[in-house]
Image 1 (cartoon, helix red, strand yellow):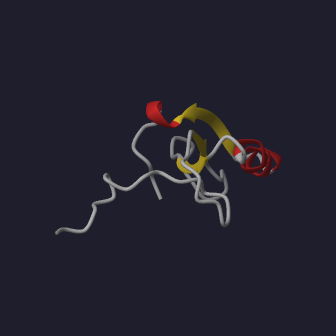
Image 2 (tube, one colour):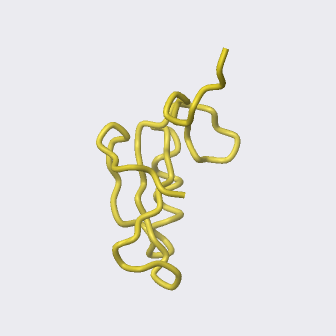
Length: 76
């Protein structure tokens, strides 16, 4: 039996301690560190979409929120 690849793994919420499936991709960048076109991605379940989005938005980092199914390739 082989180990699952990252593509096989379920996408889970980025909130600390949450193991729920992700349904939102919060695409962001820190303008002090990243080129304007660069996007990093946090994943969120329905419950944590507001809190994770609020954290990023309060810092001016949030660029867009899209459903996971329509999200471009995830970056680290």
